[in-house]
Length: 280
Image 1 (cartoon, rainbow, N blue to C red):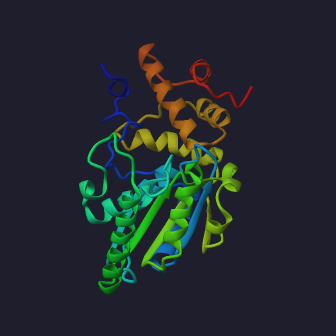
Image 2: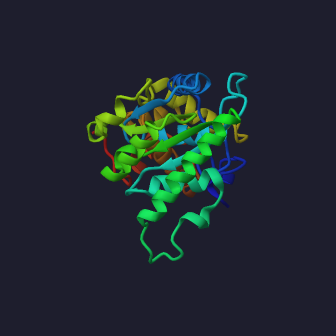
Image 3: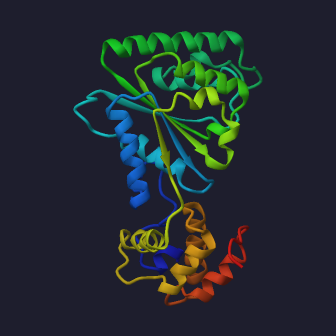
């Protein structure tokens, strides 16, 4: 029997398919979504989404990608999600052009052994300029949701700055690890129209997430005791990524030992198997 069936859940609560649009919209997440929607519906150029590692920036961007705002102010809207992780010069142009035009093979080298060439990046940039020129005529607005901005190379940052300076009909949302903000070019940050903070959750938001993530999958009775939920918050410091890892492993461990509920003692045992120990 799978662990989620043991707990009388309809499916695994934290192994969601890519197309699933559920997101725990607590107060901090609601505020971030509202700010992103403001930027999009007002056709602003750039918003920066700041949060520490594990704060849920990627999940939030993917949620907006799946469920963009519906507004009469922006009747024609499309969203693109791209990670800047490890990108070098020209690759951002190529990835973006491929997603916008659907011509994935035409701009990439013909074999994995080939390197991205200057010709490829020039062709991709030309494609982008032509695309956005046509989009402006059709009143089509594009939302570029760009993750891991701090993890790109200097050449990729230059490409991003070129896009920002292109006066395209687009809103760009950059997610940035707030601890690594200084590594992002100031030339990019000066374009920011609105800064969006995504802080760690408080105790109430954490316990509500734990309860609702099980309730929405058919569980009527609570699985985690109040003390267990509080300990999850203390150990994770309210960062969603750590909360999910700890809670999911606790559900597995509880099913293995056939517990009736997840108590604080089980949380302590499970925490020893995880690489973070924020609380002594």
